[in-house]
Length: 145
Image 1 (tube, rainbow, N blue to C red):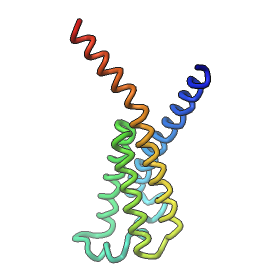
Image 2: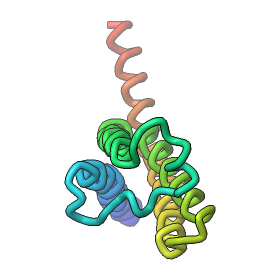
Image 3: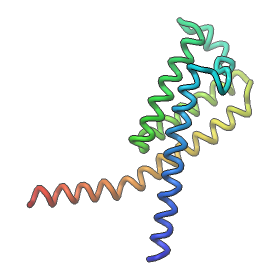
Image 4: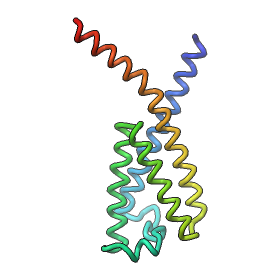
């Protein structure tokens, strides 16, 4: 029993760390689309995509920033859903970078991060399932009372 309790606490610590990481990093990256303090984000934009845009690459990056902020907030509030959104977002960024054959190191990093986001989604579903069962049980007992 003691081992199960330790394992459960360890899993919750990892889950919390991943939730904060995959929630806060997109928010920070999204905010930085407005300031370019970390990097010039437009240089990562696929030139073919940039030519197809009905607006400037800068405007596109601002839209991306808003999407990233929203995705991070969803991870923090609903990690079982938000982590899948971040996973897909990172995979799409990686595919775009791979298509340009530039920034291959960043593409690989984003694919690895997408795998981490998938892992968070799986953890969130596993951890959330017992909570949902407890709430359902509690709700059923309250309706009987």
